[in-house]
Structures are given as C-alpha cells and as structure tokens.
Image (tube, rainbow, N blue to C red):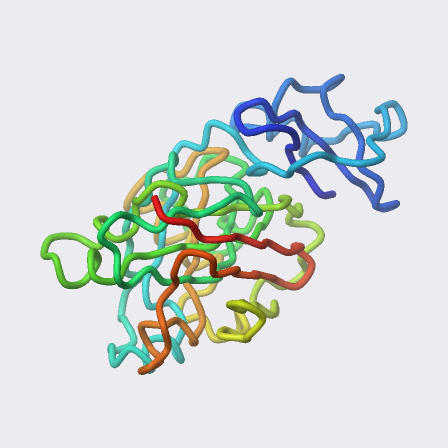
Length: 277
C-alpha cells in the first residue's frame, strides 16, 4: 500500500492506494495518519469501501505529529570517502526536529547568512511499532511500517565550521522534505537494493544505491533501539550516497531559484524550489 496526505499545509487529509494504484480517501477509517493511527491502518483496510480521489491536491508529509527524526551520518562508504572521513565503526547519530519536515514539493528556505546549503537524498524509514532493546535484525524488520523519500537539507558552514553539534546545520526551517508517500514495508522486499538519485537544475549530482550503506536499515534500527525508544511514527533518515556539494570540490552550493529533484526506486519523486528565508 501507499499512504499519503494531501491538501493545503496544516490541513492535509489521509489517502491510501492499493494494488490498482488508485488513491482513496482514508477519512472513513482514520482522521489522519500519525503514530497513533498508523498501526490500525497497517492491520488492514477494506479499500473497496473507501471513496475514490481522482486528483489528489498538494502532497504533504505522509505523517503528521512525528515524534522525532533520527538521522545517521556518513552511512554510505562512497560518501565517507568523498568527504575524507573514515568509515564509522558505529552509527553517527543526531536528531532533527520534527518541525523541519515539510511536503515533498514545498519550497525550501535557504537560511539568512547561509553560504553552504547542501542537499542529501535519503531513504527514510518509518517505525510502525515500539522498538526497544531489539535483540536482532529480524525483530527490527518487524518494527518497520514503511519507507519514504527524505531530503536531509544541510547547511555545511553551520554544521561544521561554527562549533558545537551538527544540529546547527540540520535544523533550519523546511530542512526536511518528506514523501510524497509512505510505501508499506511489504512492498519493499530488500531495502538494501534501492537506487537513489538527486539532481540540481536538471544535472544529476547523486546516483547511488542503498547497497552502499555501512549499516543496513535493520541493523540501524536494532542499534538505535538500545540508545532510545523508537515509537510508531518516528522517522529515521538513513544517510546519503556520494555526490553532495560538500564532497565535490568546485560544485556550487544551493542558491535561491535552484530546483532540486529527488527520487528513490518505488517511492516516487520530490521537487523543491529553493528560496531565501
């Protein structure tokens, strides 16, 4: 299934799409898609009883009320190499505020004073049941509700040159486009076999595969569950492949007017136009 939310920002309503690819209104079942309602939707819905939606409006983030966005840095071997960093022995973890999340095609704001706003296509994992001290990867896999596209927008000067934590360059407003939909876990046989692509103004910058991850999706969830409790509706940004501006000398960082297209196999597409804050 595909799960989504459409409508104006802040007033989105839930959608569902089954094998026929047709979008249907989920409101007869739940008022919204969030950590509280997601488990019941995943348990099964009679699609035939739901009204058709012929033309969905603007897609918003596929979930509301996200508890936390957990991010993993340097989780692709080629990305670590391009930035001159060692491949980590353990996942590098930081948090991104849930209020950075916007729709997949919403405008993204370049922070005032920014000179190094960067892009990062990432596979986002949405948690569907509580993950706490998981014993193995099989237990972790059972906690996955589904997958979506995330663009982990980053300001590199804030992140790396201004002291303190990475959070400075990760939590600017609009810095986490998410969606357009959540593809349920049963539709993704192998999350380590997905192609990820990102282009800026039509020029491909990132073209990688989740097979290059240092820590796979299920191992990440297993390890994270020993550091924090993961709740239904939490999101994990699992890292980005090579090709970011930070790792390509001479590649310009993002400026107002730039258009970024983001795609992951089976998970749809995003398009953002960048503007000055």
